[in-house]
Image (cartoon, rainbow, N blue to C red; front, side, top):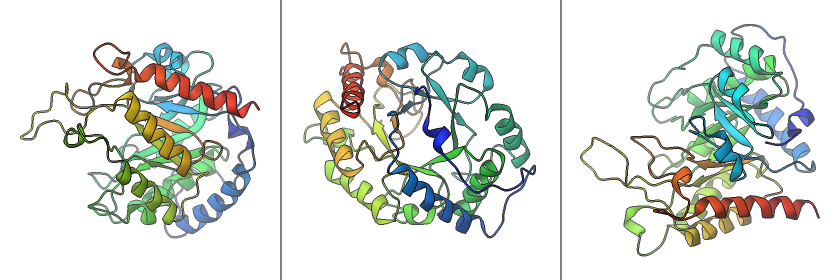
Length: 315
């Protein structure tokens, strides 16, 4: 990834690093103040553009060749295996999604943070939950804020990341979750089998981004999540057929133009492509497979897109 991530420029109020520490009531207020100050600082700081992808299953070289410099990892072994120029975003396991609990306890998180926070291959970004749902778990915002505060107490330079769905069935999640983590991923996937002939739902993409902005999440904290997958080759055992389809190159170009307009490249902390590798029941085909053979050549497109970012920032 970057040679010197913006991690070195981060600062935040600290508390004594106490195992299992988590403020039960003041967490959201503390995080809100810290994030406001952080957003102001980041808005003026030049930094290398960072690109995350996940589910690599060891194919770090392939992802790096397409321009990705951040990789999702969940073990120290994977962190050490990253090639030069790539750093890890550490997945701490899900929580407050379908089950109203953490996969890792505060003590386990403490052990992980203390073990990796100074690792030169660690990006400083902790992925603490994927699509937590306050509608399912009413205490999700508070619990994520507490986890963010715990991580800040142990690693003041570290930053937490969560992806918030905020779908049509739960349109207030951005407002509820906006202060729960440092970085908020926005993941509309507008390309599905229903719009294969008419084109991806660009209006829905714009709407979802506008909802995040309208909730008060600044562009310096929004992580665009790009759709780089379909479901035609998943092995789902369910009544309904696969829903998502891989976008074409032209559709990808149109979606990224919307993202660039709404969340300017110079502002976003990093971006994320879901997914590099396949997930048998969720994502197939994926970006790893999109080389222009049986699937659109999205790999070359993203490589060019990232290169243009780098070129533009050098002037």
